[in-house]
Length: 309
Length: 157
Ligand SMILES: Nc1ncnc2c1ncn2[C@@H]1O[C@H](COP(=O)(O)OP(=O)(O)OP(=O)(O)O)[C@@H](O)[C@H]1O
Ligand SMILES: [Mg+2]
Ligand SMILES: [Zn+2]
Image (cartoon, rainbow over all chains, first blue to last red):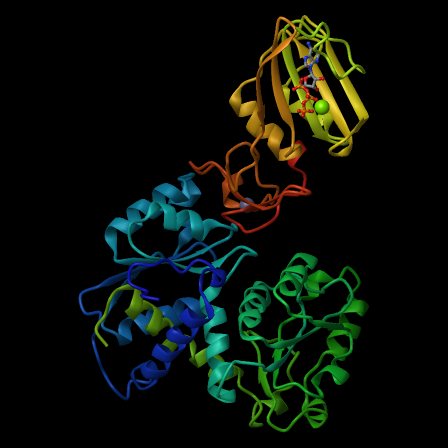
């Protein structure tokens, strides 16, 4: 797929080959993302960062990705002071921002905001999270990290654990995993399981996810353990939260039960679902995963804006 | 000429009006809601058959409205709750025009997205848009937020 001038709204808009192509490009970007090599392929371009919701990681990594390619970034730091607070429609805001830059990155509290923004702008729109909706660039960097560690994405055995109900990262990810024939195991406490709609979607595409509450059994054959944060607020009873948080804590004892080359991933920030003792093991990939946000977003920006590489 | 053109004998014949036949069983009252008919705005009679036996559907609902010919937008909306409905315009006891409603693959407007957090429910200058995911039962997926519409008949525009 030629990314030039495309929008990046949902991972479901991309085929398996499209995804592999983006990851190949991201691979090439690594030395540039680290600053070991320099190429200003987007010199003279301007990226608009439009974050209607707080974000540090995503926003910073887009900025870093842009600057590494010589692309300038304009943004709004205090969204509450701006147009939305004055009641302007997103459609109007996006038309104006679009006229100031060559591509817009949008994070917004409402689902479908990125699709709408894409409709009203001439230049590419990149969805950096829309409410409980999708977060496709996170999914791409997750896939990139898996491929980097495992060599290939096909037929991996992956366990998703934590809040699978509300976490948008795992929803986007589940849709993508399906394209690669992965064996998926879903581990969540009662009430936080993946929505039926997504499970049916997986099943309709030939995947038979294993659904369980027991993490110990699930990790035995896993290649990838993808952990998400369980928010305290989801539990009306604090003691219930404590119990669940304890059950799904990733520590060295749990790693003992897994294959020695199983990788542990997390979209971060973590609270205490992964014990710090895991950080120094070769299994821990979550910091590398966060770092991969830069080369993956560089690959996208370069493709969308037509940089020579 | 046939002395009695009315083959459906369960409901009173009408001279002029509309017959909506082959309505998915249980949807007649939703169709009435779509038509926006009530005692305050119609002067003629409406007959509703609920759970009537039908060769094609097993059971069906049927509605006959006197002195009103329904328009295209209404028939598009009817398709959302009764995708197999047949609309017959009756003039002087005979069927003057007859067509099947057509659900199509893509719906613009007609109903709102039931995800309250969807951008289409936030005062933006767009009509809601849906792709038809299944016909039996009708399932619509919002083209903006990606969610399925929960209760179409309660959310018609
Ligand atoms: N004058 C009328 N008053 C009331 N209903 C009528 C009248 N004329 C026709 N209908 C009804 O309108 C519908 C369409 O009429 P038509 O004669 O095409 O029926 P049909 O042969 O049963 O067709 P179908 O294959 O659609 O069931 C039927 O439900 C019929 O009973
Ligand atoms: Mg008939
Ligand atoms: Zn919606």
